Image (cartoon, rainbow, N blue to C red; front, side, top):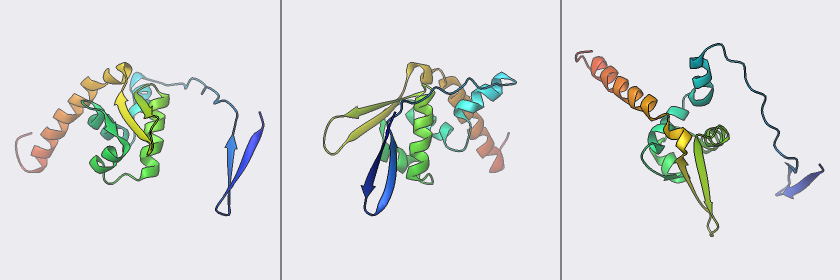
Length: 132
């Protein structure tokens, strides 16, 4: 397909009109590796935590995860969307309104996030000198 070049504010931006090619199936050595390929990293578990019970707009997620940059949040949400974990709903209004929620497949990760929360609570108590 042909590419279109768009000039904006003295910068060049290349927009590809080609369709997205499917990623080749990754080779994993164990199930944990396959899981971490989807939800691993610093931010994805936090995104899953905040989306587990509610629909959030982009700005809501930015406020709930203050240390993440807009660019990183966008990237992580796109990856989760590509993996079928997160649903992105765009409303055709001005200004644009976009909501994020877990898909049915994404909700299957709930037991994992629940266990992470329970473990985190125990770990925080241990750090404060409580039983652990």
